[in-house]
Image (cartoon, rainbow, N blue to C red; front, side, top):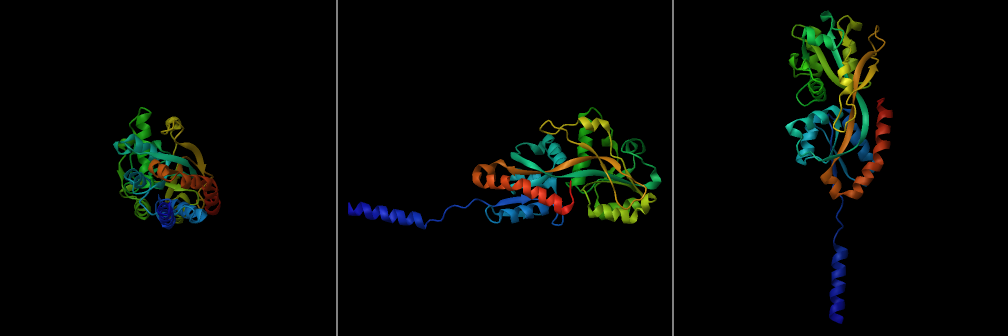
Length: 292
């Protein structure tokens, strides 16, 4: 009896000494460290305050995030809604297993052209075929342009795929469209109040040099995402610093937060904490950064 009690006591002490297994950290893939995606992950990290260890990871953007999610190199990510749709429609999307948590904020599709081209709306790109800078491969802008090409094909057309494009963005694209000798337009995705729009305004000559163009095609109003919901939402944007514009008609997509099925299965309690924090974190980010 004494031997059995001693063995039980030893086992109990060994069990007490063994540390409890902590939930795995949540590696959240975002975009650049200066952007809204990274800011969301940082806000989530501060809100959870160690209850779940959140590790924000800077990346090239939505397309890269989807790859990293699929490979298991990140556990969660902020991703444009059109990126998810395009990715899942391609071979790359096979085997992607994630849970959509919710919408973080809205982003708009924007088209700026050299004013000398006389381009008034998206349809003029089809007839005039200027070269369009669409952002670097995998960037949010690149994804959104390819989303429009994909949506056009889904709706039975193939007009946007023949528009010449150039995979450059940001400062270089802006310089090129101001010059106007090769690249005539720049397509980009941005959230409200973006610093980049302010940079465009500073060189646009209030519309005499550069002009914001309507991004409207009624066929896209019926384009559905992977959940069968409208992929694009018609909206209007007020661009500050251009004088003659009231607003420009365009389309918006949504920055969405996803968590991988594998991480959820391994950390169900931690996932509950993440979900409980999501709505206030997203609301605080929108308020702090003036987002929709």
